[in-house]
Length: 61
Image (tube, rainbow, N blue to C red):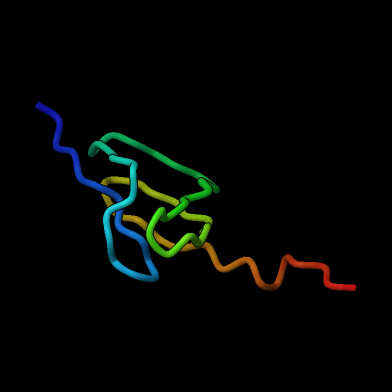
């Protein structure tokens, strides 16, 4: 049986509405937290979730 876990919000630490399994791979996934109402880009592989820091990719004019 595959292990599943809830994805936690990197800001407030609460559960989001998404679950991942141990064989799930996410790249540039927009994670939305319904409690703090923030959206974050994440990557997930082998139940390890990392936040993508894309401040250098923004073109602010």
